[in-house]
Image (cartoon, rainbow, N blue to C red):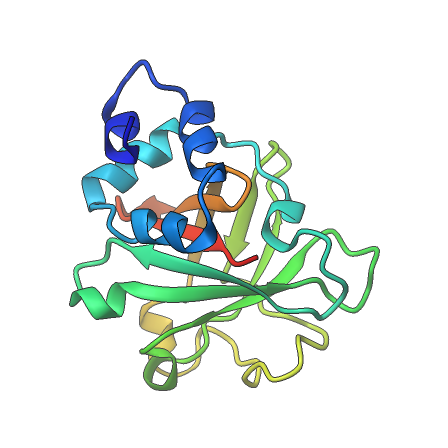
Length: 193
């Protein structure tokens, strides 16, 4: 069964979607995911497992080691601007229960990096919190850390949180909440090997 059919099938569980995606090579997986429409991403988010851990985002990477997730969002912008990356790293403090990250893509130089802290929700999930920015060293080569209230990025990231859910070993899906209001937009993330 194709990915679109599994997403649309009310009897298909997220484990069925995961089995399909986990069997694919990385390029094939990303090709399928990067073609999902807004309606398909919404349905996938509803089907996805809200239990996701920080390790899902960085695997076994060491402190300050960059882990890249390719992403596609459903924002009402031209299609090339919907593609982006979320880049994550563990902080230098190996006991920390959070991750640092930022957004990379065609608009970063104009808008800013959109730094965030990813942390457990306390309910078995992960939130990407743009209210917070890294307070320690980030991965080498990352842009300078600036608050999300600075410059044009305040219109995108300021007072925003992303709620993540698990799809498969390499895939997660999220939805942004701005000023505690769901936006009914979504983004799929696919971790690079």
